[in-house]
Amino acid sequence: MIQKLSLIALILGFAVLVPSTGYSAELWKGPHFDHHGAFGASSGLGVVDGRAGFALTGQVSAVIQDRGFFPDMTNQLSIEASAGPLLGLAGTTPFQYGLHLRWDFLYNSNWTFFAVGGLGGAIMTRSFELFPRLGIGAFYRALDYLWIRADISHEWMTAGISVPF
Image 1 (tube, rainbow, N blue to C red):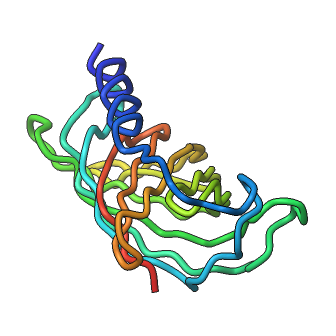
Image 2 (image 1 turned 180 degrees about the vertical axis):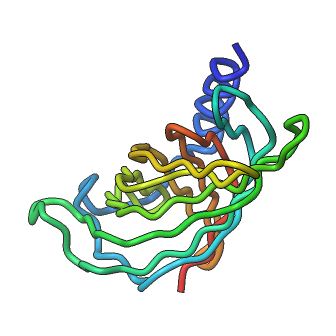
């Protein structure tokens, strides 16, 4: 139930942020990205072993392919690491992590949508988990140097900020 409500809130939040822009390029075919990586922080819902808690995550990424696999679209490939604690679980504070590829697709001057795929997991007092990590998300360019980020994956549903460099 909480995941459904969080998803609805995320979708409504993005709908409110969609501005009318003077973007002159055709959608999905804008100018190429002007950054080489990013770092950021997010918070939201985290899940481990079927139990939910408050996740705090940090991310760092680096572009590994400036022009992606679709020549007719503005897209690029980055490697990204994310990690942080999952708070609010009785008796334990798992440390969640992920190492994955992030494939960015520039929609217009404000929006970039992405997909992630790689490995994720959690370290707990007496166990170590490793599983595939798949997810989707979006960046909203609030300013040239400050983006709003939201993503949904197997273990996280978070929103936060990202700073490109």
